[in-house]
Image 1 (cartoon, rainbow, N blue to C red):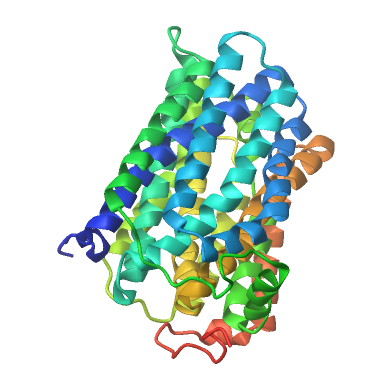
Image 2: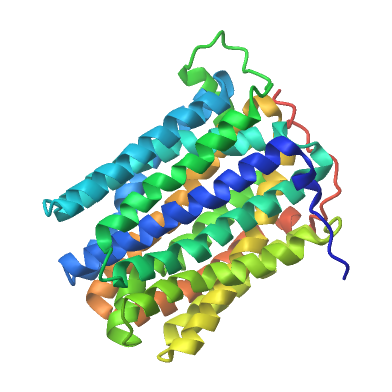
Length: 417
């Protein structure tokens, strides 16, 4: 197969955003995995790791719908300047508290809540901005490239986290401070992009409950969008094993910081490989069956990881977890964005955010609770089984998803009426 420059990267403004995201995500993921390790050093209770998910999901549930309405009324690029600034300050505070020796467990949870609030406004603005940077024909490729940006950051970030944590000259605080520095890349990209035209919601610059209700009503009228959202939630709620990685690394696989950092990258190595393959493909057909199969793979690989007591096998299983999740994400994002008019994309993304962030974050809490009483392997294995069962339920409930090819006309109601 002959390699070529992905079409989305031929568009300068998207290319800038993509580069900035890749660097920034690496820093953010370095901080996330360092934070989980930090909690493991402060307490050995599995539920403490699960509470990270709760700290992230509560603000998302509360603020996501507002964040989507904001993205449809106000300048999405300016919103990103604000949200990225909040996250930069958050990282600096984490680093300084750790350096000064004043950090406590509750600090980590409070700052995670603040980050969750910022993310509630950040994601709807960022994902809704993408269709304004590339033509519709290049949108699947753009989401594939965004997936590569996130998976690349998720490979580099955890690996750097392990190196920083293990270094005698650096340590925990510098994982947070390096993340703060990485945000410079996204500010550079946003400045370089310049003003971006967007269709504003006809609300005179006001955010009201009617605007939010319009977004919810639109989603309810779109069976394909609803099916993909529920599929995402079910899969990630039951198969979210990442919060338990510090326990697996220390208690089951018997590795230290470096081994933990590499293990944290495994799923994203698989994700990057699968995203790279998709980015080189032409138009994708039989998207519905491929979507369902990729989520089944996600569940099976989760079971494989739960059964693993060997580091190499655990690493390979997590690679397949990432591969299945990435193919699923690319197809789900493409369906949603193409089935949603521009003036509703922010609200659609904000509703979707509750599902795709709520699933894994609540899943981390669920995994922590099950692990607290039955052990980490039971939590992971039963989650993978439940994920596969959920795929079967979604396929029966929405048979149109199984029949979806990818070239169907936009469904009635997608014009926002």
